[in-house]
Length: 341
Image (cartoon, rainbow, N blue to C red; front, side):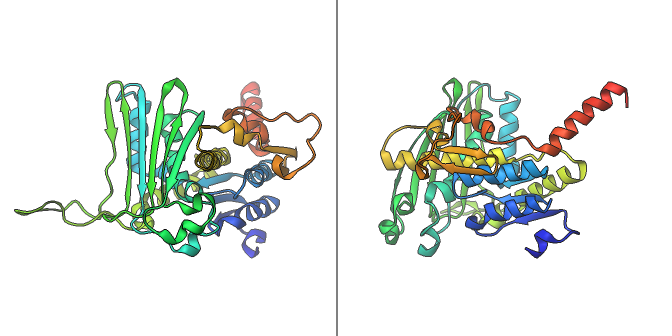
């Protein structure tokens, strides 16, 4: 709290355990600090909405750390889609496979494989699709670490797959696994009407070995996420600092974090119930009595007067109040233009 309350501090980076994020974001907002927060904003939707609204009510910036959006490989795929280099998108595929499974203590209470691992891939499909998703089908299983099979829900999975439906018939396919014997495996592929673009894994160097029994990379891919995404972490940090210095919107917003959490919760529900789940089902679980007083319908017996649950993932914005400072800036720009300043 010393950093958050220090009058000399303008912005705070929150990289603490997930269960502390929401309270720390609210504390930053109350003290007028801009916030960069690693995903997730919170561990449930209600707290997530409260934290976003706290920042918007205080007029401070909130950027969410979904670092893959800043990786040059994935960015190149996004650029190809935007420029129609491969035509109109038909299918999106991503995979994430870790070098080795985390310890039992990490998995226990972590929210399951969709929330602590697949959420990055689910967000990446939305980033590449350029659209908000409609529904999801997810399945999971355990192949690597049998000790986690006694854990509840998707915490018992070390392997999972998802199909996400987007507008215009676009489907996205995601597969994740907590172990890959050949190193950190992070790839994306997009098939379009005029071609295909795909990323490869990132290696420490470009050296290759040519022998009578082997031809290929001299070394294995990076085996740790900090090494694999070092450049992305630097780029997203620079982007946040640039938004502070130039007073521009952050490139990865609270809404982006909110949608990513909604997608992972829907995947969890789909795997548990064995059916397609519309994202609207997840959104309808939240109501707000005020911008910073939200709760889940499942945890309340009282339905607020005049409240109508939103029914589309695009309507998440209705749960979030506008950022007061950005709203004022927009008005000032209009005023300056009007008077010729």
